[in-house]
Image 1 (cartoon, rainbow, N blue to C red):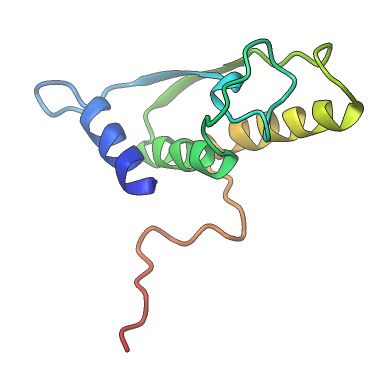
Image 2 (cartoon, helix red, strand yellow; image 1 turned 180 degrees about the vertical axis):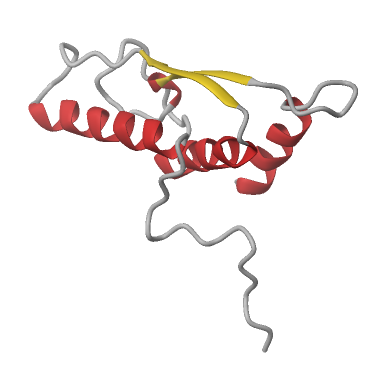
Length: 117
């Protein structure tokens, strides 16, 4: 998961001259699997997990080039129950925070190496 996403970010964040570009990131909450964000207009089964989206946010934060961020398609009126709204809002907040450096306790430092047997 992270290897593919990391390679995509590396290839697409740089200009042809190799310069890191300033970034305006727009996140559509329905890119997340509905298990993480059900209160949206176009849920995508098999979409990103919240940890995957937070990984992207963390990597972009590390560039120091984030200039603007928007998050769209959160719709608390689309729900079967209040739990769905809470899950979607939780995912939206965690996503935004990740672009500003927030990580969860389960996220390993990017330089962490597994001990050798």
